[in-house]
Image 1 (cartoon, rainbow, N blue to C red):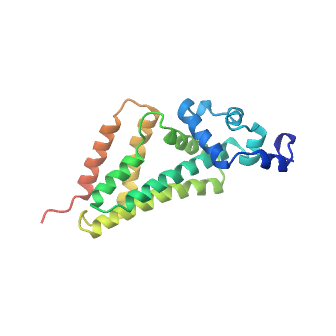
Image 2: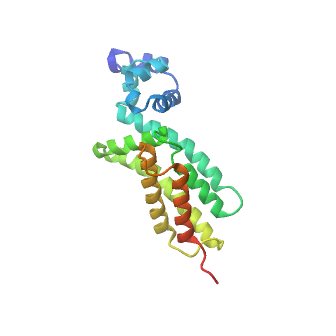
Image 3: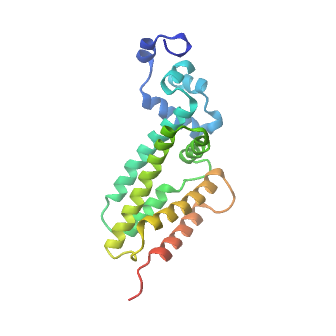
Length: 207
């Protein structure tokens, strides 16, 4: 039997595609914020009971993590496309930064990330590993960009791993401020700060 006394076979037959649920969850976060995302409300959006949703996702924490993984898969495709572009590495690095930084306060993707981070304090090792896998993909791609820029002589010979760690810390700090709506800097100002740092950290030494 599924949650709520509904037979498992019936729950599977009547369930919408998993991605439809994740798309609806992300749309709800974008429109009403996390406080507007409830299992009952989401169920109404996709034509499922909250019991069916709990059967498939086990908890709201799992629903949020799967929604984040789905959203990150979309962003991952965009990130891989920009990494595959031809042309100066510096331009692709700026495109990476632009993709990383939230578009505005209450950006739905970053709102979801912050909630998952907050809930990770009580997460199990498997959930933490899944979060680390998302973070790791961003980090590896940044390291690869920096290493390519160094090999092509566009960047000075720095430790790509260490610089990537510092750049992501800078991006995370600014992104959190923007996502929660702190009146510190606009998105344009944040991008300019990051551009200045990258120029200072990576500009080739004068001959």
